[in-house]
Length: 73
Image (cartoon, rainbow, N blue to C red; front, side, top):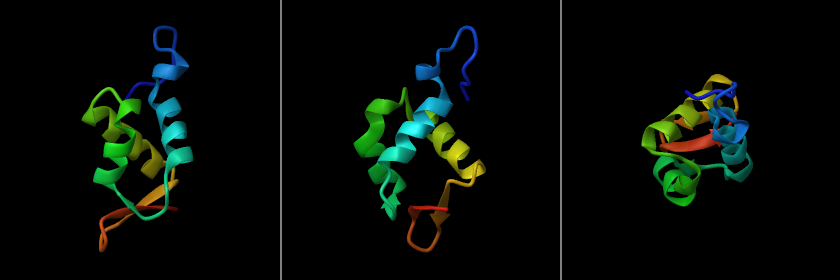
């Protein structure tokens, strides 16, 4: 997970990408659909997963296991 420091700018950080993704999320969208629409924000799939992990740990999103969609917490 990239956090801003002397060598990593805020725009390249996971925290910044998480804020962008959170502002663009619709409630009840599948993980695959989110990645397809927003993949230009991320370096690769692992960067996307890091952002989702961060949002989950911060309590901003939850995964509805029954439907397989992301919802706001």
